[in-house]
Length: 352
Image 1 (cartoon, rainbow, N blue to C red):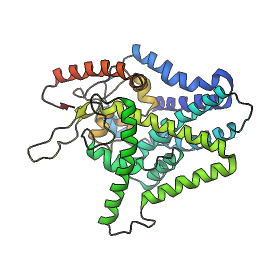
Image 2 (image 1 turned 135 degrees about the vertical axis):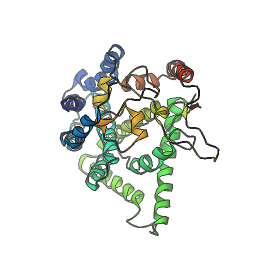
Image 3 (image 1 turned 45 degrees about the vertical axis):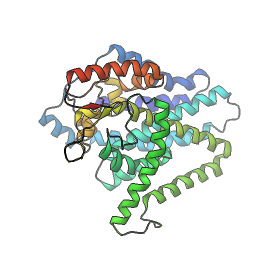
């Protein structure tokens, strides 16, 4: 369990990036997208899984949950600290940019990644914590679309959050952000109709989400000023782009087959790209073992497994995200990996 305490290293770096001026404002960004990718290029990952007895003990150990829960107040502290720091009129433009990028990283890793894990939990208080985190990134509809849309339609042309082969990251940004928002409205409308509840009511979570996010922006603008509000929105949007970059790399070029009845096959480990690289695994709370997450979404992060048949990324998530920012390099590397995977699994999967 102690290794997951390292998940607090990035928030600590973000804090120092917000507190200090000069080049230190870029400390968190340099660490996540510079140092960690370099380390994971040379440090291989472990394919080892827990045995059943160890899994049982891990599930009974509440410390894993408290590691996750602790990220909620940390994100809110960093959000308030960011707002206070951005009021400093003496900041140079490049120092201000560094702080915007640092808090954007917080929105992506804490505001969305931790919220993602909490959003898959069954208890009301854990789901409430998920929504509380997503509110800080202005991306509350993710709670609906991800759980009831993405996990149902993953690796199909119907899923906004599954990247198609030859689709570059920047085109994916537009399609995924736009279509995911509309998908969340459709999912919520369908739920209300099934439960015979009115669309224009407090029962409509999408309406509630828009009001909550608007109120948050009004409060920030009222207390900290319009200029700070704009910088907050930019940071939150950066967090959204980081999420969508992760979405892009997780299922790129993978597509489920349709059976004879016209339905898509069950989601299997071969429908998600996996990574066992250690730093990304710990810092992202095992999100990188994505194959098992989609195979059994209810499994808690500490017991996610490696599957030998799942496609493996050549390096960890941070490094693959950097690669995705440069489409020609991404295509060169990933089309080679897709070819290798197709050769080793000729009948297991369609590759779009």
